[in-house]
Length: 285
Image (cartoon, rainbow, N blue to C red; front, top):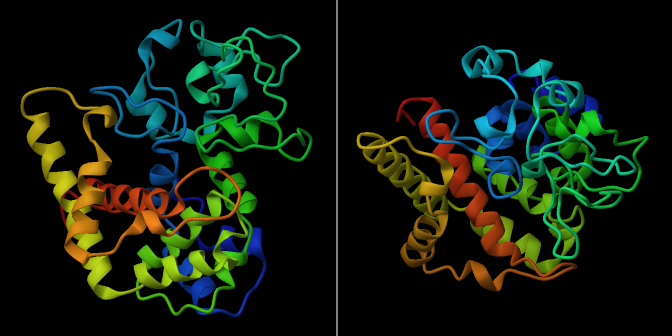
């Protein structure tokens, strides 16, 4: 996942002359990708993965997957990898755009089962890349953990990197990026600007970092008695801690298209991001 680095930021966005851009070049990292997937699609599985970069359910596949080897070579995962290995709980609509892909990677639809839907315009892949342009955004760019990460960076646009904000840490960059995944123009709305500026304060970041660390500690404690998946970690508990500690009503920061509460969406993803930073550094800040 580290191949998506500062050079990729330059490739995706070109050269910009803003503090947010320079910080993004310096700090883009795999934890941002993993936090972005969490709560979208893919599937974590106890004892195998605490990420949703893929569908990690063994029951999906026709043979036993060497997950350790695969995790070291994620670049091999594309639509053909899924065509080869996925045998159960897949989309069977041969006329659709997601044929053969695990339903865990497909956006939920209340009208038609995910196994039968055509997915011409709905989200596909762990990052839920959504577009009816299947030439510009082919299936590989949607289901690959690495290519999907590149694709979602491009999909969220560059408004967040043009913000008049001097980020105090990587958390500010991720907050703006996360909000932009709900809509690239949201950071240009008044509520979006206020939300990112609130998160770009030391007291709020201290609370988010503490919440992420608490989640990490709880996951470690749970792992002593059972195998843990992401479904064991309720992010709302830790986001509520941030709201209570800071006195900030994140649910009030919302607007623009779509019903999602943008303030809580962004906060939840920020807490998840910090969790992953502690998880992959063994609890070191």
